[in-house]
Length: 152
Image 1 (spheres, rainbow, N blue to C red):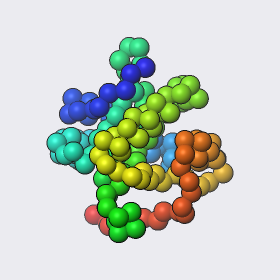
Image 2 (cartoon, helix red, strand yellow; image 1 turned 45 degrees about the vertical axis):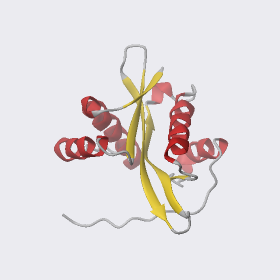
Image 3 (cartoon, rainbow, N blue to C red; image 1 turned 30 degrees about the horizontal axis):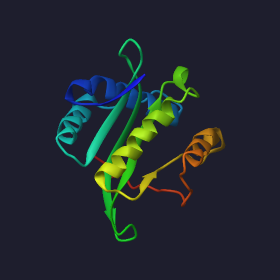
Image 4 (cartoon, rainbow, N blue to C red; image 1 turned 135 degrees about the vertical axis):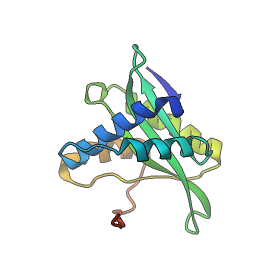
């Protein structure tokens, strides 16, 4: 397995893996709008505040993704990183790939001067392994997240 920083040429793989993540979280098929996603990925890949990392298997197929963005707040006294999407194909779970992706993001945090990384993790009982993974990797629980979504 190798971990690479995704670029504009990896848009299809990024969209595929994020769609799988959302489908798994929602319990039903979910597709990311390719046109909107491509526009965002192209704009974000030019920004140093956003990065997508892909895990490639021996056949150079993307089997895992993690991406981060930069945020800032008074309570963190400046900028910090947010893990926005994190997914590993089921066949590759529990083999250390998630840890490799997370370690790459921790290195990025240090490179960016972030002293904090935050991630939202589902709190439902069926996601207890996800929460336990983050805790094993040094994350502490700070409370639930809520969202507001503007209607189109």
